[in-house]
Amino acid sequence: MNVSKLESNLEDVRRRMAAACARAGRDPSEVRLVAVTKTVTADAARALVGLGVQDLGENRVQEAARKQESLADLDIRWHMIGHLQTNKARDAVRMFDLIHSADSERLAAALDRRAPEGHEVPVLVQVNVSGEESKFGVSATVAIDELRRIADLPAIRVQGLMTMAPFVDDAEQVRPVFVRLRRLAAEVTTLGMPRVEMKHLSMGMTQDFEVAIEEGATLVRIGTALFRGV
Image (cartoon, rainbow, N blue to C red; front, top):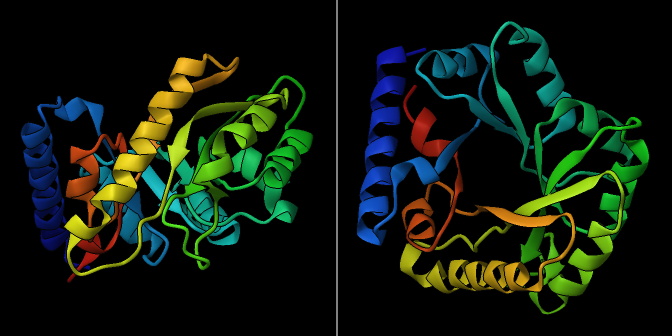
């Protein structure tokens, strides 16, 4: 593993994040990097944490469990960023600090049932803004009603929204996706739903994170740009 290349990649991503914040008139401290470690070894993840990255994102419970065992000596905030099956809910509420992919009331209810007594489960509600059939998430047209039902679950704490934009060559093409999620979050905020806060907008990946930051992302999920050539 090429640690110097990893460090160089990280510096480049940080620089691009800061530049996007500057263009939008935002404080860089408002945006957190979630390093997507789903395809890399525990050693590579350990090296990245050693460079100052504290937030790691995983797509699958089983792979995350193996990494968590290997990295148990490190102070890491673990994010579940992939589609989560209801039969993995018991493990998920124990393993992750934030679940980005609460993509249905059914899944949220499973997380609520599996939460230990007195335990709160922080989630982001995943919204399928683009309408692509291949994407998970609640439809943007019914998201507020779905949020109300999810917020009624006693163990669930909604902390924001998440979306995945279509994969395109030109990131400008997906700016409307990020704009719509930001506007939806603003609308939710005005409603003052109990136990719902729009603290986070999880949007933006390697191919489009700069545009996402310009449109209000607080969490960007980046893997390829960090681990390319490592």
